[in-house]
Amino acid sequence: MSIGSTLLNLRPEPVPGYKFQVFINNIRMGFSKVTNIEESIETEPLQEGGVNDRVYSLRKPVSTERSLVFERGMGSRGLVMTMLTLRFTVGQRIPQDILILVCDRTGTITHIYQVHGAVVKKCSVSDLDAMNSEVLIERFEIAYETLESCPIAAGVAGGALSALGADLF
Image 1 (cartoon, rainbow, N blue to C red):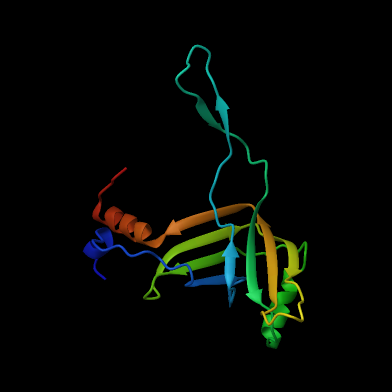
Image 2 (cartoon, rainbow, N blue to C red; image 1 turned 90 degrees about the vertical axis):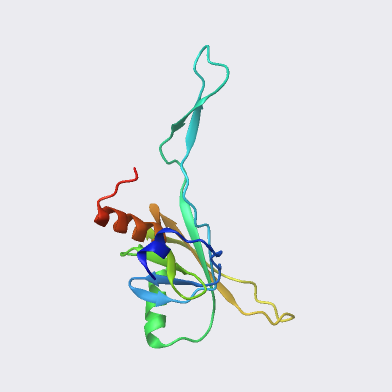
């Protein structure tokens, strides 16, 4: 892929939501679903006296906890994955960042989410139902400090522009 096609994509395609990889402690782990990926801030409206046509939004300190939920099918695993799963006990801090890589249809990484300061908050298992033939799902809910999002095309374009000596901002 050339720099020109990276900077100007005339045929953008939607990124599928089913092609992703999760790395925890630098080990790739399989999950069927990851929920609550979001970047947000808390604001407080401030209305200035005499100004009736608008309010100002001020950034508040973070007052609520952020969490991610990882889901996967429960099954028999090898020794390495069993030992790694023992790190998912409630209250356990995950020492390294969690990386979530999102890929396009061709397998090229398009987005990276980096989760810092994760602590396992809750572990649960789906309902045991003898009348249903669904896969048993285990859920890990983690609380985290920060989440960084990095679109790869923007990073490549920014690096290419700075290498050329061009500043857009």
